[in-house]
Image (cartoon, rainbow, N blue to C red; front, top):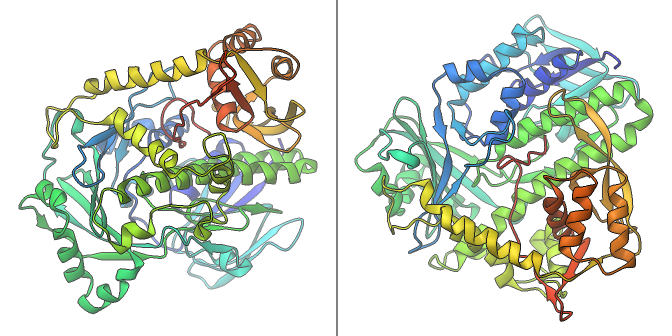
Length: 571
């Protein structure tokens, strides 16, 4: 591996995790943070996948010592008159780096911990050092203009990671930002003093609660604090301006009766804050010698608490990519394609996940501008022209090429059904164990569908092995691997495969192979624990179709997925 000097802009989770990963890979790192920590940030609810990254970077003991609230699930009161449902993080811990919980953090404490640890391990951290110019035009180096208190000075490095957030100077300079026409929201939030009213398996959970004008987040933090935010459409901006943030916030929050029941007589103990224009991506995630990470690259609606995980996952990926680039500069184009593909797919998964849940709720909530604007009703929705998931869905529908809004809505309703509580109201009597039968029924239905497949069809003329990369979960090195695809560049990226696996799928092209036979073949090749998951992912990617003994197409039930939960982390 070639040792490189890497410049990092921004000391939040993306910047600190990138610096820690680069340091572990043996690179020299200089990090420039414009503020002096601790400083306030929103984005307090994490996912288990982030815990996994922190654990593998050796931070678990220090995280535990902070006493953050443990989060074993996310609970939703999603849709008018709908029973509560819980998205549980319960999962088999098949490895020491798989987590069944996350944490709720005070970001000023959490971010300071990460940055302090990066500095302790040898990263040069410059506090109160704003970057006033970025130059990435050179093919051999990157340059920054930095003021760290003694006046502007030029800094040069081999590579740059921009983790400076939504106000990224580089993104503005290169005009890379694209705002999302679908998630045009604004958030208004504050903090209440309120001990968590729930015990048992609801203790520490995040709440997302719909009402006629949008939804409310409620996050329990240590010190008996609740972070409470109201998410509404940007059409409310004139009303916000007219009433002012405090009056607008309190009046809008009061409309959400179920949130007010949880708050009871809690006292608000902080100022009211506002953020606008938060859903966006960029035309380029990386190029030449720079990588965008976290909020510099993209952000979408925070319903599923994915912001910090997108930041940390992209940070590890960018650091791994730089490590590979330094040793194999001839692979630059392939490495940048991999970064764009892996990062883009994670963002797309969140985007699709959110759209399905918004569409579901839009059919239950009273008619309002918020819910009308968040319902997908047709395959020609111009707001989603840039979304790969939407075009794929609209072109394939339920396997036959027809758009079926019910199928899309059912993706959310299936997951809601798996997590639905047995009581119509929130109660400390809720136990994760009461969801067990719903999970068993879902797995049984999926298994029955798969086992009914008497003949598989490969969707394409060729089974191809496409070069790809994967981040080694232990070493964080970027390793060349292969993924399955066809001649049209349709690929399944989640599982890397050994070359001999392709032979099992070539048999699908030439003969009558059923589901059970394919799984047996993959198992014999060494995929004992992942054979069925590989097949399911190929169905989801549109590379496989299945037919029963009568020749009727088998519809394998759709499943909404996103990175950071379960046992299949991208990083």
